[in-house]
Image (tube, rainbow, N blue to C red; front, top):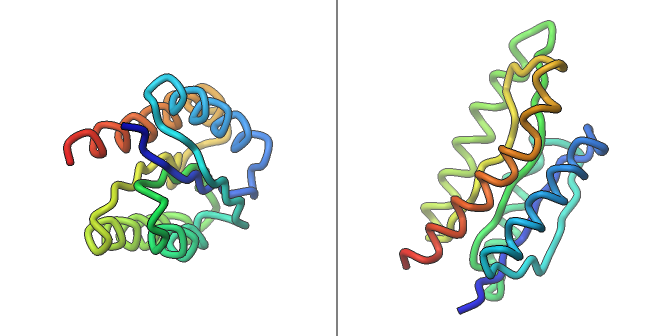
Length: 135
């Protein structure tokens, strides 16, 4: 069975997110997932609203959220990262549809981003795939 998934990508780090998108698309294809929607959002803070809108659709079986919350000078990113993660977990449980979390950080240093882009995108996509197969 082919499952339909959506990708949500934060465009604040557009170039890096594009690399993550490419890896998620490749991984989805390898594992018989059909990416039927790609939603670009301003940043990770908007991910829960975008996810809820997509999860309400009957043709979306799961979502992969990709982005970066880079280390800043204050704890803003850490607080936001916790809030976004909790909101996405709550949505996953409410809709009973898997959400793969591929957000780097919070608190990631710029030098740590590039080596992790593809592995995070792949892992988040594979998590959705595995959860869909367990239904």
